[in-house]
Image (cartoon, rainbow, N blue to C red; front, side):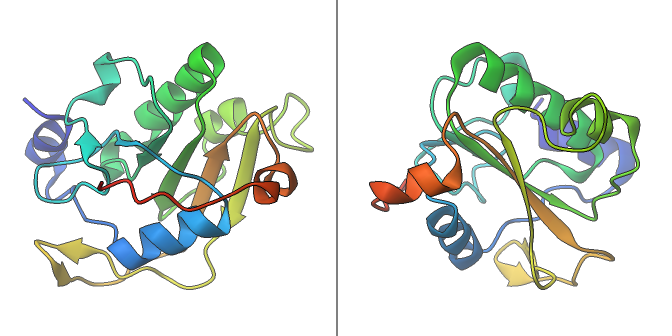
Length: 169
C-alpha cells in the first residue's frame, strides 16, 4: 500500500498536488534540480522518476518532496537521514507548518535552537499555495508554507553554476 493510501485511510484526503509552476519556480529560485519525487502518486509526480513508498527506500538522487500532510514528521526525519547518508540535495514543501513541534526543533534547528543544522536552509513561501486535487485548484491551507532545503552547498554557491534541468525529461 502506498504512503498516500495509508495516510488517506487514517485521516482523509492527504495527497494534494503541488502546482507545476510553483514547483519549477521554487526549484529555480533555490537552484535545485531534483531527479526524483519521493512522495508521489501516479497522478501527481513532479519528476519522471518517482516513489510511492519512499520511507522504506534509499533516496539515491537529488529529490523533491511534498509529503502527505499526516506524515510530515516521518518525511522530515527520512529526508535528514538520507541527506546525512548520501548527501544528495533535496527540497521539501511543508504546508500548515507548526514550528513548535519537537521534531522540527530536533531535526531542523541546531542544538541550542539559535540556528539551523548543517546543510539545512529554511525559506518561507510568501503567499499561500493553492494545491491541486486531481488537477483542480483546491482551497488554500489554513496557514503558511515553508520550504526546507538540504544541500552541501549554500544558495550563494549553488547560484554560481546553476542551470535548470527539467526533471520530467
